[in-house]
Length: 385
Image (cartoon, rainbow, N blue to C red; front, side, top):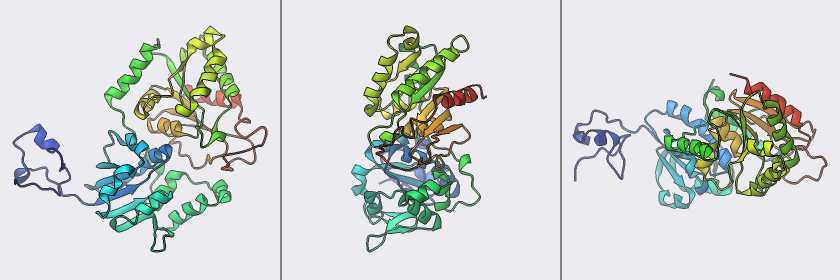
């Protein structure tokens, strides 16, 4: 067997390294690019998709602190696509394959997930140091430091959740013990390939769009788990009409409707509400609800501005450096780091940030968000350079 430096940062188990690919004469025994791996770091964050995506904001500061280290991330099967093209991750481990790694040694474990099956994974590996949350011998949750304890507390107490003023990213940085670090300087990581960007532009052209138009994305559904995050359909239609009427003869705009599979009927109802007016219909394009996750990302990337409820689309827009208007009712508006990219529209209802999935109050918190207020935020952002 030939000599291989398997502890090299660039070593790959299934293929030659990138340097050998560029120059076949470069071999391990004479390689000037050899760098020994500093540390092996395991990150656990399984779900939900939006939470996994915004948690990638830890990768840049971690790579800066632990140079020449390899990062492994265990996530849900559905979230694996989020990490495509991510330059900071050495290996993504889908939950369905995690058993293949049980018993392996890591220098650092970072578990930022309080889901039971994520906590149970912390007992399956050997590690020297840990951040976040893990289980002790009695299978009770242990927090690694004060910041982790605070996050644990607000995760179990809706009153504390309502009172919280820190962003999720601030808590992450404190849990990881980064000092004097502004989360706003470390964005969410989402990298699109040239082909993915091309897909979106080809989609627009095939649907008769002028690529010079201003594209405003709208994703105001919520899926099944958090129905109360959803902005009412009738108000969404009002907002669309108001935007089209205002920008007529001022700016060529196109409204792009977004949503997942659960929003199919919602978006269909919105389109049906516009079908009797050809002028409105020509200005609105339903991007579909059966796109893959990466296609969804790519289509949001063409937006000049995105209006979203507190869902995955919000974090995608921020990751792609888009102007974003975010609507909040039952969930915490303070937890969302906007990275200086947008505006928050918060319900005036006093019981906001209740974290109730079911509410019988009429009108509910999202119904009280004014169409005019959202519209004014659009005007503020659309003209902002």
